[in-house]
Every structure is written in structure tokens, then in C-alpha cells.
Length: 508
Image (cartoon, rainbow, N blue to C red; front, side, top):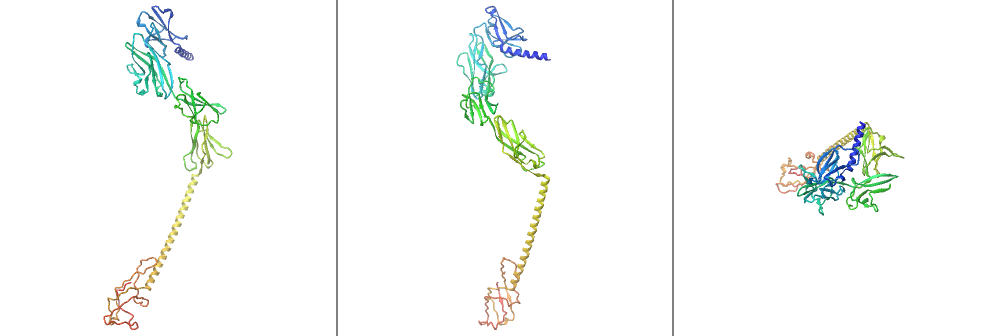
């Protein structure tokens, strides 16, 4: 098995060499002769199994030998020839044989690296036999089912972003603007003559890249920033560095050295494309610590302390500490710190730190407060509930006693007022003009139409009053009593009159 693995590795290495050194050569000993020998040349001792030959970009034949022989007297053999070996897809450059002008397309260069958002020109030149006239040409990256190419100028993804910039005969150049990452493709050129067509098979490979700042440690607190791309930019540009958005003077390389005190955010750009900044790199900031879940903690609960921070490059280490007088204690080097079955011993201040290649930042401490065990808390709640119940009961009883005393006092007051009304009735406005009293009727005293008005009290009581006792005439007060007789007007002598008289329509 080891021997087979070694042989396979050797074969792969040889193939790689063939890919770089492969070329078609015309045997100089056959030039000008009827038979012309073409050799697929390579610089290694490894002999491929098969050789694949192409004429004017079309497959011609497969051979076990690394050469073919052409009849120079046949015009059909004129053209450009290339070869390919084994399972490789890479061909040798085409060679024009038996003609001054062969079919061919040359891409210069065949690899282009450009920045995303910029413009790029893909350039090539082509040749064809003199008897042919070029009618049309296309750049393409896709082909239809029948093998015909799809012109990029008609591709929806390139609408308004591509144009043919051919500026001379046999020149084939294409400009792509506002480059996107999806534009990274292999672009090929095909031209059509009045007699035939030809495609430059190898094409030009376009790579689209972004700028990015990386950070590396140079030791002793020094850092190195590098403005890098995923491919080597084709125009060998100079670079611009920015600190906190301001240009750093006298820096045009793709590297920037920093000492340990160089805080801030850094970005870079390429000269000529200053508007295409990289995203900035910076040390951690806005570091915060959080206790989950929030709210009061009881003994026996579980809690998680979580740390977060904003940093670019991202934070590579989080650390949790507990503040203790004299020296803080490192708890863990993780973003989260969990405590199960917590107790009052865990109470205190906690904070976290966030580190990346450019520095460190600390959070504001958070306080962890453990109130007590759940059983003690339940007992406390029960005691509080009992006290509240007793207080409510005592207050309710006191209010009931107070209301009862107030009701009794009101009843005594009403009784006293009733007695006062009975002992001291007052009569007023007693008109007697419509009644006649004769001397014969003095023995009989009648009271008719007596109306009593309620005696007002201080509290505005509307309790009914009894009429005055008719037997208790000694304490009755009379006011404005007018009496008329049917006989001749006679002034009644108070000494001779009966104290009892007839009163009618007595109003009070």
C-alpha cells in the first residue's frame, strides 16, 4: 500500500510539472519538408498514458506517443495546434503551423484580480487566416444547450455594467464596472468570420476581492495590522491607513505597526479607491455583565452570569471575576459563569473582562444578592400574614365598639329632646277671628284644627313630637290670641274670665 501511495504521489507531482512546461514544438529537421513533425514537449521523465491534440481549438485526435505528423502539402493542415496530457484540463499554448496567420486568441493577462466595487478591463487579441473576414464577436461565461455562447452583454446579471472597449483591429477588450463577488468567473472570447468561428479556449480568470484588516502580535505589546486581499491586486497599488476615521500620515504600505498604547479603530483603503474602506478593527468596548434570571435570588436557586462585548476582531477570551477586598478572584475563562444551588456565600460583586488581539475591556460590576432559603422565606411570609390578620381584626373590633357607643349616645340625645318638647310646647300665630265664643259656652271648651310644627333640634332631627298635654295648662304659652263675640263688643276682664277658652285653628 505504501508503494502504491508513493507512486501515485510521484505521478501527481509529474503531472503538475507537465502543466507548467507543456508546449507544442515543430521539429526543426522537418521544417520545409513534405511531412512536418509536431511534438508535445515536457521536461520530466514521466511518460503520460495519452496525449490529446487540438487544431484551431477543436479536438483532433488522441495518441499514445507525444508527437503527430502532418502533410504540409494539404491546406487543410494549416492552423494552430495545442496538446493536453493525461487527465489534465490545461492545454499547451497554441502554435501556428504551416501558415503566417493562424487562428488564435491571446489573453493579456490571463489572470486579473480587482477590488469589489471597482472597474476592470479584460484584454485580448486575436488572429485568423488572411482569407477570412471577422463579422461579429462575443465575450461569454455561459453556453446554451447547443454549445453557442451567451453574450455577457445580454446577461441580466451584467445589464448596464459591461461594454466592449475594442479600440483597434484584432483587439478584444471588455470592461466590467461596479464589480460584484459573483463576477469572479473565467471569461472567454469567440469571434465569427464569414467562413468559420474560433474561441480562445483558455480565457481570462477574474478574481474579485475585498480588503480586510488582520491583527498579529509582534511581542512586547506591539501589534501589526495588515491590509490584505484574497488575491494579488493586478495594478500593484499603494495603501492608505485611517485611525478613528482620520488618515494616518506617511503610511503607504499594506502594513501598520502599533504599540501597546495605540487605542482606537483602524481601517485601510487603496489609493484611487479611498471610498472603499475596510470595516474597522478595534479593541473590545461596551462590555456588559448580566445576571440571569433577573429578580430576587433565594438559596438553592441556580443563576447564570453572562458577559457580552462589541469587538473586531471578535473577543477570543471572556473572564469572570468576583470582587474581594485585596485581590479579585478569577472564576472562569468563559463567556458564561453558572452557579447551581446558590447560597448567601455567593453574594457580592461580579464583573467580566473581554479580550481580543487589540486589547481588553472590563464590564461594570453587578451585584448578586441572595435573600435566604425558601423555607425561611415561606415562614416569614406566614408570620407577616398572621400579623396583618390580627391587626385587621383588632381595628375592625375597635371600629365596631366605637360605632356602637356613638349609636347609644344618639338614642339618649333623641329621648332628651322628646322630653323637652313635651314639657315646653310653644304655640304661635293663633288666629281666632273666624270663631265666636258666647258666655253660655264658657263651660265647654273645644279645640279644633290644632296643627303642631316640629320643634327644631340642633342636629336637624325629624322625629315626630307629641302634642302638648291638655291637662297641663300651667306651662302653655299663647301668643297673639284674638277673640270676638256675637254680643256687643265687651273687653274681657282677665280677672273675671274663665282661664279655659275656645281656640280654633291653632297653628304652631
